[in-house]
Length: 231
Image (cartoon, rainbow, N blue to C red):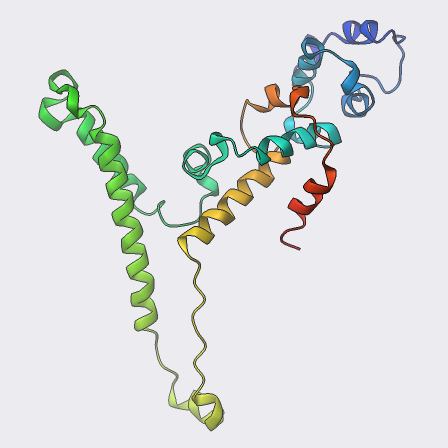
């Protein structure tokens, strides 16, 4: 954060506030924004990006609601494919296995296939991305088969274990609980979107969205319902 580049006088003059006004826009920017966000024009609000982080600005209800409304619009940047590419560390499902191999296939297509970049024909332009997608699909299938193999090869109870079980219990088989690919993706997206709303993602877009009043809505009940879904 660069406090030296922040022009507190311009902010206070616009609002016709004294230099010693409290909360100070310089030393207490979040409380100041909480009180005066709606009163300031965009060009002055952008000054606060230099002295606050997206996570700090989450404390301002109006900013948090803007992020929430942006998420509710289902933007392409927060859909599964884009989000996994932008924040791969948050993805815990199949696909990260073999990522290096898929990247290598894409690199091969772009540098070696048909003699390299200088020799490529026009129709080869998207081959690298296509091969990368195929490799990721193969890795996902391998991961699925591995889970089934693990289930089939599950070690039976030992005789000592069977002695401690009742006859009735021996007939009960606890089913393995597995998450579908769709459930894994939904969990990932929810995690990404929650982190986005709370300013915990590395993304320059915060500095545009947080000061954009076109995302203001009066639908706090909808926000509460969204956050309470997992309760």
